[in-house]
Image (cartoon, rainbow over all chains, first blue to last red; front, top):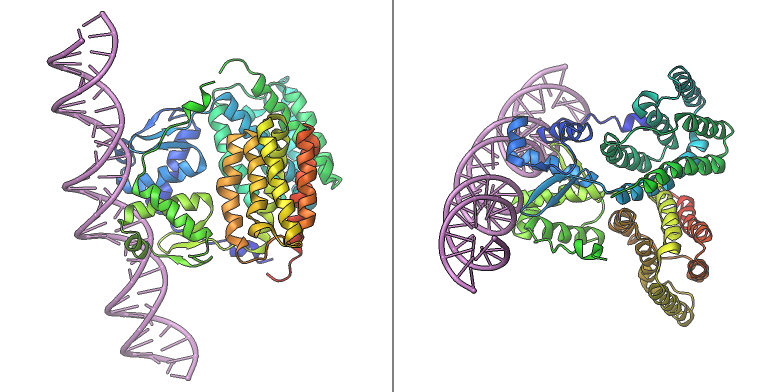
Length: 224
Length: 224
DNA sequence: GCCCATGAGATTGTCTACAATTATTAATTT
DNA sequence: AAATTAATAATTGTAGACAATCTCATGGGC
């Protein structure tokens, strides 16, 4: 019961850590657009800190894949080609698949109820807005986040939610949202049913199909 | 056709990058044992550099998961519990599964021949040394590395070979090698056959079973 | 007119010093 | 004697200055 309390170490915020979050926000929100250079001097002045902490922030974001750095040249916001994005989705397919499988084992009844309500909201929204994407896809990601979290695998959660999803968010702003939200809703419902039935194998299979469809859409997109 | 040449950017080596490799070696080789503190001043003196580049090295290793840092306290070599290691193996199971699937599509005939020879060497070694683990497991990892590389998915390659495997190597030195090398050899042969047959689905299934067995051994290990 | 070399400017890499925080030790109190 | 508090030492966080490298513009040669 105390396993949650153990992790409750309130880390003191250093400038470097604060700026890491700010810089990440600027990147995933599109404020700093993909491929644009990141000047240490300029950003350190903008955030009102020295170059040291800012370099630490850049280093951290590089570790997350949001930033690409080249010696003696500098850092740039990452720019993903269609193929690289497809590679990420291939990984996501596999990882969220196991996340769904583990979630079927570990999800609590309370979490299941919440998830069901989320799907209901999603359904009403699609109905009322006649097939429009749910809240700019945020609702869709909410669904996925919850299942990932319910897996209980801390490393899986971290990789998917704190690394891959940020990368996907960068790309997402340059693309239209879910192409067929009704279809997504149906698949969500099926996955939910599998979780309710505690059928891990089916949950994994369905999740992989669900994400695989998105990957294929990316791969089939013309140009680049 | 020039896609390979594009990536051939010979990055200049900065002190920070050199020391990152040195420090990583010291960690994965066990020179710096798991859980031990990493003093910035001490290490910067040992490597003959300033604290700045050393901090960069630590930051990078933190991004790879080899080092854990706490504000105002310092960095330590990561220490994995049995459960955390099992979590990593769960991810590896999924990721190497898709790697095998992709490899079945993309592996070249030349790579297949090399892989076959590696298995033959492995087989002779096990025969001659009567069931002993093959070269302290390095041969086993060689097999896995090649399949991962053959997948062609750059991000998958990077995550598995440059992050997860280093973590596993830290743990490995405190554990005995493969428990049943004959069994591993059989499974390797089956995976190889699936790759030869270009049967991606089967390759994935076999790879997942293969790694799943290792994960279960970890989970069943007593204590901690 | 185009290509290559040279040099000024700008940016990143590194070092040193200082500030802030934590860990440790010693003294004091109950 | 044990526990608490205060002072000291050690370590990390941050800032600023200098060195090394790259970029870009200018000028010269073919």
